[in-house]
Length: 260
Image (cartoon, rainbow, N blue to C red; front, side):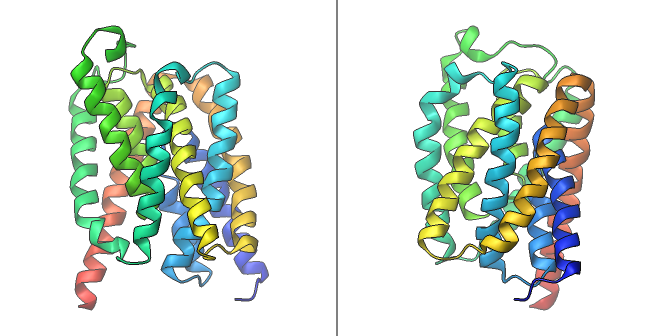
């Protein structure tokens, strides 16, 4: 594939927006992955290359939140090895099974996330995390779900950040802490999948680095905006992005069915 001006502009513009949104509420893959497909990359290579760009963006927002003391490392560090391994397994599965088979399930899950967040007005407003209330069974369920999400991120990806944030919210985190803490787990799953794809020789460095640099700039800006705007802004943007993810995945699924 030849790199032209249109491809560069497309990757930069989409990368800035993807990094900005992903830093706040997740869902950046909804923008960055289609950008790679738009410039002519095959689906499997686009998914692999997107992990390079996503890793750079997530690392930037993670470090910004970490320096500001917004990430709950004490609670999340123990699960990082499990998320890493599950993401590697997901990435290895891509070569054997088409990620498109997950789309119907993703649509259902996103719809549940959307409806629960919209109708539960107090969701994510107070910091009452289960590790502080003694509800160990919910803590175990939440961490178990993180492992499943790690596999999904390595296998497909779009919507991962939103799923992680939702699980953290369900465990009692506030929106800002959930948004910030999700970056640690999302970066873990991204880097695990990236290393796997690198070993498989599926990553396009030129496209990935151009998109990644743009996502770094967007991620830094998004992290600062999230900390400045607070809970109400993050909640609203989370609901909007989840709805957009539902529409986009539903449309893609409809196109797949129409082609059969």
